[in-house]
Image 1 (cartoon, helix red, strand yellow):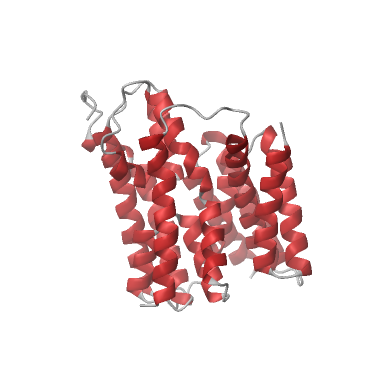
Image 2 (cartoon, rainbow over the protein chains, first blue to last red):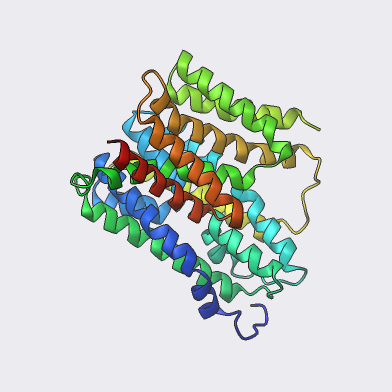
Length: 230
Length: 107
């Protein structure tokens, strides 16, 4: 493991994860509630968070499963959605510099979500030295918050918010807000034609065929426009 | 527990692990910036997210528009909250809060 300096170990990682934990808990809770509404049991909701651990994918998995999408179509859609994670590890290690420890990356890299990646990259950009122990602390706290928040939401149940329609509506919009925020985080001039093609193809595919066809058409059109650009 | 749901979770979870861990373990050099793989990866993420955002709000706009004001408030708050610190979590929570508030005020 890379040499550690004070403030760069496991405990520092746990502390750095506090803002992520505070954000993950309500989003994971709303996923647990949504899973309950979709007819999933508490173990099934918890299993999705434990095994998939990708918020937007999990919300979409609920929509695809309850919408009757074929297993392979659902899996391909969810996998395609997370392809962006391929870039996180190399970007992080580039910022960490040569000689940064990778020995336990098979474990800590599981926690490289959008927010954990952003937090770790920000710490390195501010001059902190890379340590695998820090990555473990950062990732573990966020992962635990995600799983526990899901279990709490699923335990509260799909009918838990019937008495609070505004809160129910807010949690219902959480997924759209998450997608929009993620889109803003990856948006730049080069991505604009890709995004425009994806949006147009999604609308056209949905209006002409179905929601599932719209999602596939959008992803395909955006990726093809990106491939065609020099 | 539903067997199809477990299988779906295992496929997607395995892919997620591979996407996050394998590049750190195997890729010791940067991808050529203009290469086909780099361009494909750079385009797929934004394409997927833009698609999913569109698909998530489309049912509120078509065929019968509903809750247009909460939707506008939620979108505006998400964008405005993202701009200062570029935090996905803060923007998500702000967007959801604005949507819920507008929903309560217009209900």
